[in-house]
Length: 475
Image (cartoon, rainbow, N blue to C red; front, side):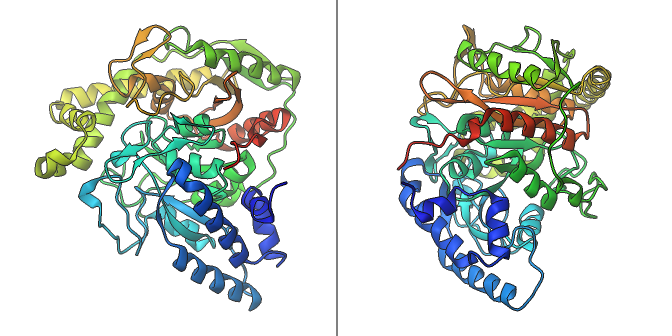
């Protein structure tokens, strides 16, 4: 039988928030339960790398006192959250998984952290990332490897691997913030049987960032259910004068019921992106029957895929350009402290010409319009999140997928980064398990800025299947 503490830790974020507001549970009880869970479980997966236990208990006590005084609680009042270790947290070490920042303690919160704390969230610590969040497998020289909660010999994904997926799946916190350039919200969600949502660019404003007009990288929510991800999105989304691409829609637009009639919804399904992306048969074997659920819900499903020509080049060029802008000077100073694959990416950015970046932008724009036209025929596209199930944690990345060699640590995640290049919102939702018990996620991609529609389709699938309710082995 689960203990009372475990029952708290695996409750929904919405349910916990309601119980705290009703004073059925105190914020102190909730924080203590999660700290106990971290103490028991974190040694098995290494998800949380900096713990702020005393500060969290002090904040919980203050939260209970504010509620007792009659103050209006925020939507995340009393909920404990550990932030991704690339997201700056005032007064708490933020390392980005790099020895260069091993002792770095910021003076201010990053915007996403600022918004969560303003909504009542209590910071309990920081969670593990790959070095500078580069790569979809979570390991670094400071804190080591984050392991998959369903099989510790496997990867938890990345870059929000410890930052969200492993900690969420194990009940260490009910919500998590993450970021996604090439799949860092979606891949770890798929690997750890939780929900990860990459919003449309500008939906969640980012600050501070070196290139405020860039759209390839975004920040967004992770949770154990689509409804809880929408709750966190309602806090993270909305305009901010510090972000030049911030969308004007207020976050409250996402704190709404997600139920909808799915009859007549038009879906495209592509198991391999029109034959252009190799996908392990173990993934396809899980997703093929999962897609049939939509037919049972009354949707029309056709096998189809947009023309993604140029997405590879646009993504790789703009990503390399980003890394050079963000980390080039640091590489010159501390080359020995960079992993080789990231150093190569930065150097690829350095040799780009104006013509290279210009060509990438032209390809990026043409891609956007082809995908826009595709979504005139369909309400959403269904594709794999990850091309493989969770792989051996001792590898940096899978070197082969379905008989195809993977030349670098990006190629095995084309199923995510091709979607990133489109500018579309994309949701990873639990879709089932391999015969060996490894999670597999389904990626639901929608038209540009149709974030709420994507969440509603994912919610319908989640409610019809219940895969998200399968927890990792008890530890």
